[in-house]
Image 1: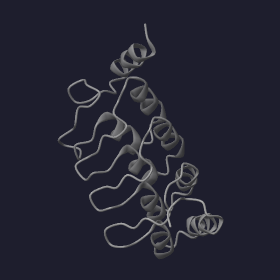
Image 2 (image 1 turned 180 degrees about the horizontal axis):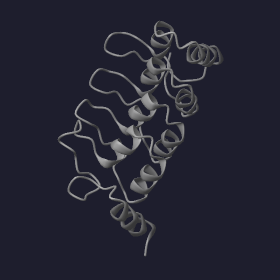
Image 3 (image 1 turned 135 degrees about the vertical axis):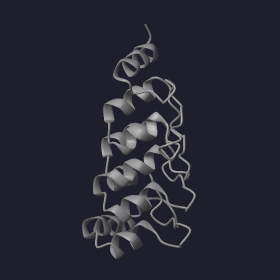
Image 4 (image 1 turned 90 degrees about the vertical axis):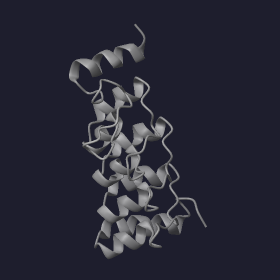
Length: 162
């Protein structure tokens, strides 16, 4: 049995597949999230690992254009974010409002996720549709540790961009 087949078998046993038993099933009652998006939202590292091993689409988006990496940034799921990045997730993916995972991490004060995203080359200079960066949001929301991390990264030239 291949790794993919073993992963699918475990996912079936645990009931971790989609609403119709598939990898890419979208839940109409849950923002059109796929099983991988739900795993990222729930900070379920084991489930995400199995879904990726089974071939889940790391680029899948919900109805708002958010990827699993956006959810990891929101929930400060650094380990799962690392898995997604290793699997090819786009670090600077934008949702429908122009938010990147790093902007979400800044907004929510998700320090560990910020660190993972910066190491992966996330662009700290990108702005959402309202013209705000991750640092702008971290400062506005009083996320001082994250703001300091982003300032230091900018000073060191980490995080791509301008």
